[in-house]
Image (cartoon, rainbow, N blue to C red; front, side, top):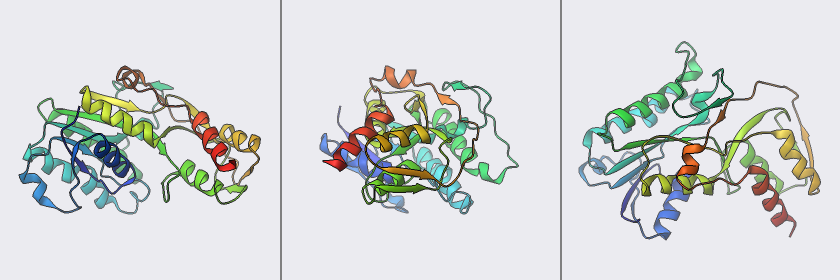
Length: 269
């Protein structure tokens, strides 16, 4: 399938790689600049809503709401799209009691916690996408996305980038902290699959496996790197996201250990 695609947030981490993939496959890709309101007056085809704030959401709460909800609301009201895929986060599952959660699980939030601005704004974006688009909306809940391109965000990305510079790594984290990691290329494959099927409702875009930092560090040790951690805390691991819907779309993300192992082999070559 090819056609017209609009990427909101095309200069971001996911948006850049998605634009390259769609362009390479022959899609007509429109990537409006931030603040360009002319997009509301044109046909947008399949919209991939990749805009958002992650690392500094607590410092910029109003910008977070603008990115996650306000622009989305205007886009939906304009209505000139065939399909809307909204990028959300499996972070919405944090704090839930269950150890394994699928997309139908109810979400619980504490509105008095100022750091919940990220979760609450993403949840509102999900609600608008799923209930105000006349059945044309779908939500991709992304877990911790990683890559090793320059300035790729996130702890594992920074770890991998640093490994290309030095064989002695001192990480500001704990070996006991665990996350579900998924490589950027698998995320892009999932988004394209959601457009082509097309997908409906919510899809967890995750590996379905929670991996502790210490387990990943063992791969580095076996490959000849030295790894130490600055902290030794053991927080509760977040719930694992069920990925049955993702696999039903034909996407089976590579295990993080396999991706990291291949990357380290490439660095040694």
